[in-house]
Length: 220
Ligand SMILES: Nc1nc2c(ncn2[C@@H]2O[C@H](COP(=O)(O)OP(=O)(O)OP(=O)(O)O)[C@@H](O)[C@H]2O)c(=O)[nH]1
Ligand SMILES: [Mg+2]
Image (cartoon, rainbow, N blue to C red; front, side):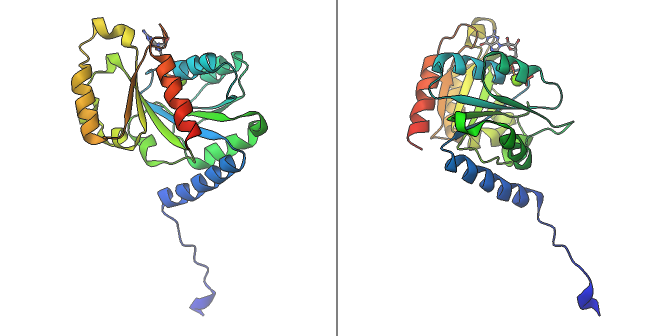
């Protein structure tokens, strides 16, 4: 009798997420789209970096954007103004993007017109780290006013990323951000990571960032 009872084996959330992330990755690979997941604290400059990169690349490769925010279309509106295809995900309180959200967003993007996809994750240094989305590279942004001690407090994110962009270097004279100490600390956690200081405001360092991005895109 008990053989007739239906049983659903629940899949742990992260494993289920990884399966969808693999499907996203397969779709992106089949369309020759390189995807970059951008993680950072709120206000570190994720949207600014995407806008500066779009400006610097001048249409080659062709960029598309998925914007992840708890609420609002503010960031997507800024990207759309540049003429770049964009989809906004609102997590309605969720502190990170999940692969299913990206899967839905990919259905709304003109994939034939995109070579490089930026996924702006929700501003958070903890939760996005665990959730793969199907991306080819993970980038972290840390802005100078946040302080150079963040690797002590949030070590996980520093270990999973391929590059760390230190944004707002125009503010270095006004902050006590210790760049050499930060470098040493981060390389201790992740010896392979690229560290790219820049300012989205003055554009200093943006060309080194785009050079690294294109290099890693073409060698993937
Ligand atoms: N001084 C200075 N300000 C910057 C720089 N880059 C961005 N900002 C400012 O920082 C603020 C936040 O920038 P955003 O690009 O919106 O940051 P974000 O990480 O996308 O923020 P959320 O999406 O809200 O998490 C804005 O007022 C930007 O103008 C920079 O290089 N220097
Ligand atoms: Mg933003």
